[in-house]
Image 1: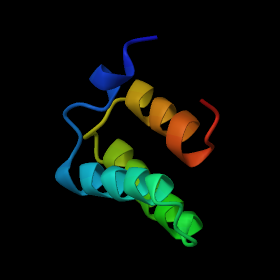
Image 2: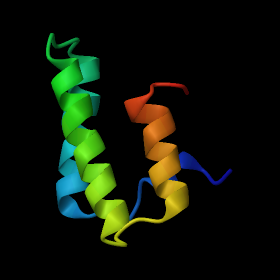
Image 3: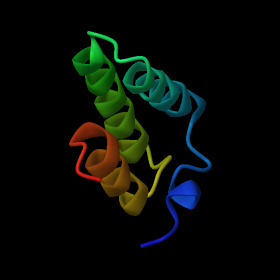
Image 4: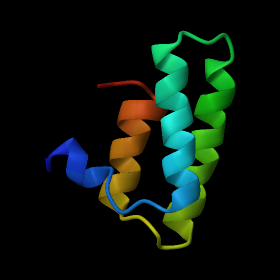
Amino acid sequence: MKNEKILEKCLPKYLEEDLKRLKDGIKNNVSYIDCLINELQGSVNSAFVDGDITEEQCDYLYRKYIRMEE
C-alpha cells in the first residue's frame, strides 16, 4: 500500500476540512466523535461518487478513519 501521506493528498477542500476536524476531535477526546465520523463518511462518499478521489483513497479513508481499523 502507498504511504498514507500520499493517500491523504489532493483531497477536495471539504473532505480535507472534515478529516482535520475528526483528527482534532480524536486528539482532544471530544464527546461527539461519532458525529465527526458521520460527517467524514458523507464527505468521502460524495468525493468518491463525484470522482474527486480514487477508490484506493476511499478504501483507505474508510479503513483508517471511519472504521478505525489501522
